[in-house]
Image 1 (cartoon, rainbow, N blue to C red):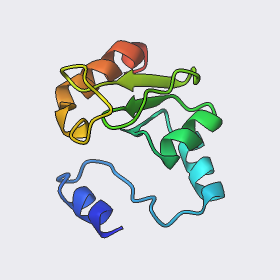
Image 2: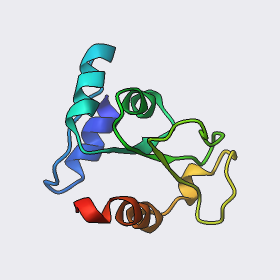
Image 3: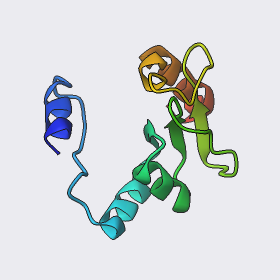
Image 4: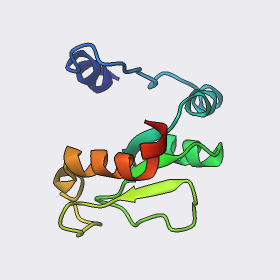
Length: 107
């Protein structure tokens, strides 16, 4: 939770929310209320998928989910994933490009 607080503090006022203290039910409701979720292969991403909220899934260290239609996959810039440093090799530009590609009509 402290890491989330530090990250939010570093955003210079950009809209952000710390959802670390939510129960599973509260988290599911939270991701339902949003337009989409951007994050790593994680519990929140899987909750978003379960409630039909599109997720920009960052897959650097884990296998890609191919069975979920609401996942928009982002791999490391060099395409190599499932490696310990895979997440560090996903650039912010690559994530933004995927958002623009999949959600340009909603931006």
